[in-house]
Length: 223
Length: 261
Image (cartoon, rainbow over all chains, first blue to last red; front, side, top):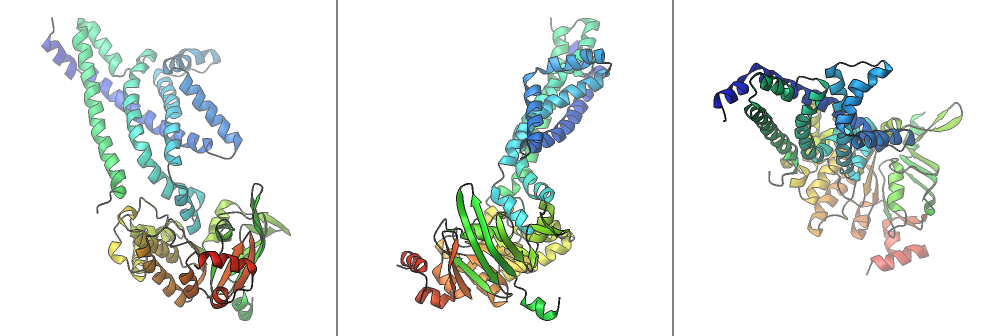
């Protein structure tokens, strides 16, 4: 039988709240580091220099090809064979960041490629340095193309943090599993966890819509 | 340099400029010089090398050989210990400050309103404070008669308005030489005049200009001299009157027979 009281107990339990918080900041940290790495990878990929292009292509190929679960287990339980010992959190963040960067770099690249050549030329003709051209002209325009798929990626990343439960990171799902083991209310415990994910993803959706509207401001034809 | 020498230094000096794209020779040895305050219209058949020449003045295209000087300084190269070295992109960017360019497709920055487009050179090239740059930009917008659209984004402006903003953007950083690459070719016919009027008043103010154009009436009125580039070489350089009424080169006559019906 379904127990409403257990369900609500799970919902307001400290374990759930702290687990959800862990999932949120893991998502944020991995997103920021992953995005920074992705921008570097995308710029390397578009470089004229083979020495930059190939390592970037290799990285993307590798981390998009290997399942994240495998990557995580290799980092957490495989690397100690070489004397590299990472704690659960460090291993989780590393694996998730590398994996995310590989996907995001393609999103960033397509955004940068969407900026018309004339925009670069106008900026260069004014006398802007290459770095300025990117920062002032290209990235603001590319971000409009990047944000919708990036929002999807954030949504996916947030849910993918559940995978870190396998390397003993106390995120929401792992905490839920611990909580369930106390009273064996499996369904109530998991539904409560699912509700956390749904609510947080919905909140993110609102934030994303806001960002998208902001970025579209200059593309609206009626003033 | 003495005052006399400075006065006689051409703003633009191209010496035997050559450029090819793969096997296609686009510029086959072009030499042109232009003094301060002069305006030169470049005409010629499509694919003849007009735009390539214009774009090589500010190194948007790098030339293969020859010398391109703006205000006496060689573009894209420097002399170091007796050898000629190609400059890095950042150093070329600094050289480009002496030129302003207006494009066929306007190329206004899409995420900035008209005012910030015009201020962009001051802020991001000269490091002027934003507020101060906006004040100067607003004055520049007034000069091209479009200050009432300062807050509008490019997509909210007509082609003619966008091109006037683009001219203001190029002028805001006070270039020595203005380069126009078919500034009216992408405009609806009823918008051509407003852009031409801005360019005429610019010429009257003594700006040195190189203009690539197909508009015969415009060339007649705006140019001190007309240059015909065809097949990668200069076929003729003369006054507008001679060019259109008494062309010396056979290539010019061919060209004009197609343009003037």
